[in-house]
Image (cartoon, rainbow, N blue to C red; front, side, top):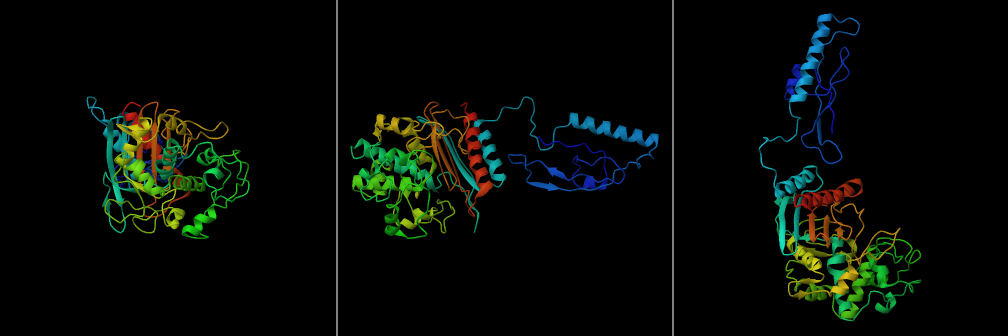
Length: 450
């Protein structure tokens, strides 16, 4: 909580600031007021968004020369102001009559989202919370676009999912191929993709790719080549450290898994995903990009509206396994309900129960972080709501997306944002944007008693 030293001054300058109580410097002759902070809109971490400075003279006699009456006057003023601080409500605090009704879950979630938007972490967001058979909450906030003109965020906004593609498309498609008898979770990667020609890959299995323990680094290839030439160069990658010895997030792992799905099924990755995952689940607004620009498409860090933000996925010239999928909160809700149903949504079966179980349990042992088959299960993930159970799994996207599914509590939380609009963001600000999605998720879960 921000602490303020009560002011005893009621000078012309203090009235100019709206009559608010201001912090003051130590009461010495000629001292000036401290800088006063506007605390009506303070983001997480206690960093004020705006501040004002007011100056004024404190009517106190110089030290050692004060009269008794002057000293008594000063003491009296201090006591009066102290009494006001005790009785009056704090500036910026929300007050309500004692008999006022408690805020509804929708009001509490909206307050949490607007706080992050007002803190300047992203222009807009769509939040959806649900459980099997029921959407508990679904709302849009802020703006989908702020330049060259403002466009309000629609509830059915279409977002580039970035790395959420890895689980919604690639990992799920691989699981379907396992159920079809075309692939296996434990097979060596060279058996699944004989075109691989890197050194030291004989000990690398499918599980190593899916848990980012393959030893492949996250080198980017789109600066060296484009299209099929770029994808061909990836087949020559070699592990940079001992297989299984460390966790290192690498887009190459999921690009290779996508190539394996294509080779095993004989279909392009997007065609396979549409036929076996998206259409059966009724995910009609989900597709690989690029998309035609429309008012529903939300800008990202891509050069143009509807383009894929990720450089490698954009340069590939065709759908690949690490990024490039576009979707909406309602479509992702249908996917999440299928996952909560252990691979089934109503009469539609996407994954067998056995395959689903193998994909959504922790496959790594400490000190490595908890990872499922493509899924993040690390309790310390920055965008993960803390109110989820240890069995929850999810994934983030560089464009500002988070999807979390909790099989123990039977709830899912979807937070979609446009954090890279109007410009790409990194560093400490990026980390705070990730944490903001976790805070929104926690507000939503708490509001519904989870």
